[in-house]
Length: 315
Image (cartoon, rainbow, N blue to C red; front, side, top):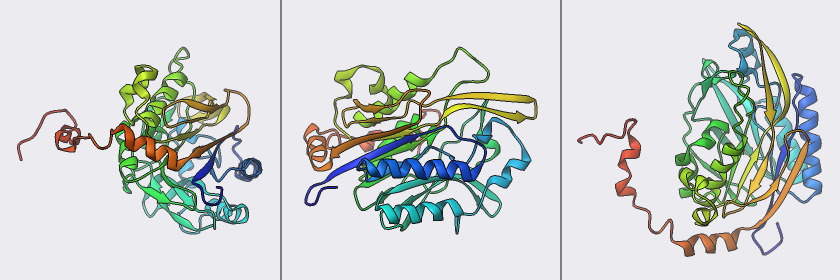
């Protein structure tokens, strides 16, 4: 960030994971250093990057991959790296908390300080993505973290499909949204490719935090909001499951979207990547205020969002 200006450089990393923790940590560190070399201030690593995406299978032995948040070795390693380079790093990991387990992120500030924990709120359950077997629903709520460079909101993968999550973080003052991800092919349907849909939904969050706007075209996503950074893995991963082998090809396509939902940096579905984009946070704030979206919100009319079935309950 330039002195006297609120210019921030963000980065999304993308790589293929092995199922060996030291190898993946070495890759993550190498790419973090590469992003720092390109001027990045805040660097996003993909979801659960310590190993394969193990949620393809329901296996008791995979709970051994979880570790407590306190003194977590990967978090500690990234703390040391963040302090050395002077960068912010959200760190994804499989958390064990007594008898509970969470898909979690620790946000590490540029001096190595651990700013706190977010636990994934929305837990998917479908072929190849059987996360409910492993993870409790997160209990932290949606949070923002005041880092050296910006106030950021961080959510995880399936959270990105819910506009309420993005809006909740921005209402709390998030200036940039970060979504580490593990998403790819669908084992039950080889013809289903969700990649474009996945990107459009998050472009809508960047533009207005409203999922509908991601589907209606450019003029409808110009209600200025916040930049968004999405990091996904690549590569084919084959896991032994209780029903034989399961296979997912992760489609990468990590990207950075600007405050109008426009994609300003993007990767492909095959190559390792270090994406970089720079934003003027003060300019974005002024634009966001001038559009009046947050001025004209009507929270008193949105109580139906607190229900599951859309029916208003008498108080």
